[in-house]
Amino acid sequence: MTAGLKTIIYPVKDLTQAKALFSALLGVDPYADEPYYVGFKDAGQDVGLDPNGHSKGMTGPVPYWHVSDIRATLSGLLGAGAEPLQDVQDVGGGKLIASVKDADGNLIGLIQDPAAE
Image (cartoon, rainbow, N blue to C red; front, side, top):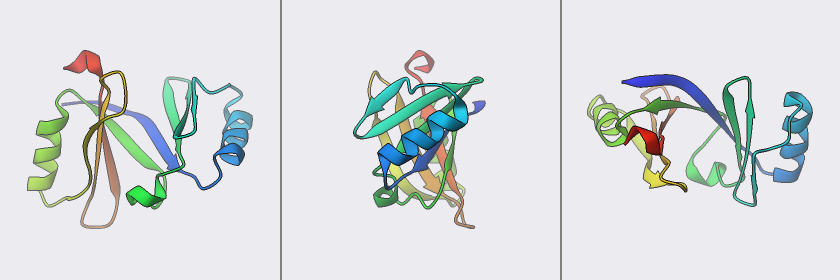
């Protein structure tokens, strides 16, 4: 079961430049501003900038589905033929993420918030 698409993460090469661009686009300051991730919240949407995204196999923006059981959802996707890109990882505060690639090369991200556990 999902709670929909609420997060999109962009792989970026120049975090400073990308942060300036998205600050101008969204008209808000980031809620998270770390060397490994910059995150914005606007109109109920999370927009993230990942300077390590390209090295993780991200070829463009990745939509993240918010799910209640990330391990079960990931297992179901793999069983349906998806290729694993990133296994379940805690990115802080109990928030779990994972990602896969479908047969057409589309990236699919998963997020489980700590409250969903």
